[in-house]
Length: 180
Image 1 (cartoon, rainbow, N blue to C red):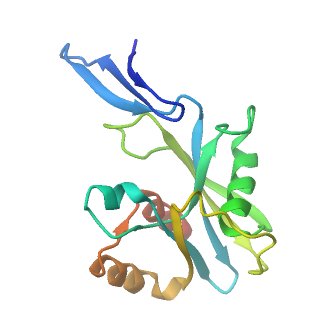
Image 2 (image 1 turned 90 degrees about the vertical axis):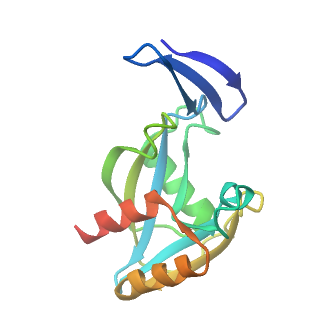
């Protein structure tokens, strides 16, 4: 049984007893049932990545993060399925529509010691790189969108790290599943 220590619309701070009897404190999203993580790719093996997220800056950890299109399932659309969220978040954050979206893994813990959320990792197969609609910036959170050749991804990520960017676990997980 967990106790809510602090509640906001999008994030709760909760505690639960551990096996040793101590209280374990973690974050929980009260209004979402999952997180979708989408790596768009084209048949000529170009990947679409996003530079984003202010918490990294707020704590002076890095310039921005390198991530993928992503979003909460059911936070704004009650009853939303994972599949619906994948298509919606892809369109919202990239302006793109996929020929098909392939779910690679479900229930991936983003940081199991700190948060209760899990992610569904998917690859979006894009045929047309033309934006269908203007992508959102999520209130300034998304600062840039880039296409990177798959053959250059490791070098590009190393260069971004050297520039002070932080790689998200989600982008690394998506790249792992892209290789399979």
